[in-house]
Amino acid sequence: MTTKKTSPDFLLVIITLLLLTIGLIMVYSASAVWATYKFDDSFFFAKRQLLFAGIGIVAMFILMNVEYWTWRSRAKLLLIICFFLLLAVLVPGIGMERNGSRSWIGVGAFSIQPSEFMKLAMIAFLAKFLSENQKKITSFKKGFLPSLGIVFSAFALIMLQPDLGTGTVMVGTCIVMIFVSGARIAHFVYLGILGLCGFAALVLSAPYRIARITSYLNPWEDPLESGFQIIQSLYAIGPGGLFGMGLGQSRQKFFYLPEPQTDFIFAILSEELGFIGGSLILLLFSLLLWRGVRIALGAPDLYGSFIAIGIISMVAIQVMINIAVVTGLIPVTGITLPFLSYGGSSLTLMLMAVGVLLNVSRYSRY
Image (cartoon, rainbow, N blue to C red; front, top):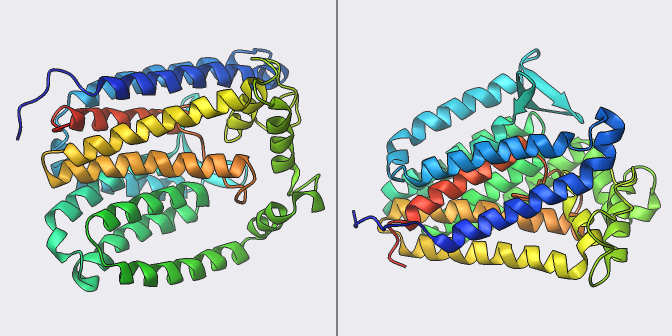
């Protein structure tokens, strides 16, 4: 192993903290009206987000100093624990249901979402598998199929909740990792055909998913039901113009856009800060992606490269899907915007993942 650097990637730290700070400000701005109405406390969501941000930052700096290769020996145990938690979520009395999805386990006044932590555990495990079996990855039976088998086992449990958004991010992240490991293109073609058939079956099996597809194609066909959320999102983005209406001046957060502090926070940000503010966020995420790819390319071993590319792929896929949903490019699905959206499990997981990435940067050649 190469000599440890005196410090981790400084620019990555700055970008992460900038996104986190903007997120805390926007969570308060987007949620103040709803929080005052429901809890008589305009800071209700902001305080909870700040608490999880603090926990996440502490975890990030701890993991930044834990040698990343130690996760190789613990990857299997972490994966088993996350599988157990995914099963526990499905047990009545343990799992908590919100908006028709049983994805949370209550811990006192708070709750955690095991599917979020499964994403990071799966990255750690798959990085171990691929680094130890890279020569076999071109074989469908010995490399490609076994790696996908464990991924889709977790995906199946996540879909029982159901949580298509989180499952899609996890599967997409793992496919990127398998692709960069050297898997054959032909295998991905077969997987793509199978995936399209599976996606069609998932959509047809749930009426609300069909409604999301039809509302995506023409949201004004059902403006008060299935198309309501995307219409209100576009009504927020449009008036923002170039410079926005001003921080705190959103109109859509006044009970038009449902729970604006969560998946659709980018719409409120665009309304208040305009095209310039939205572009700044995309620029920060682009810089985050650039630093992550450099760290992955400069990692001293295959495990470091795979775990780094897995983490940065997870962030990139989640950002692309969230922005595409908010701007009406794809059907609505419940995926948070990393570092910005309200959500304790998602925020903590992302900061932990950055911590692991920062530790890899301490050994990177670049």
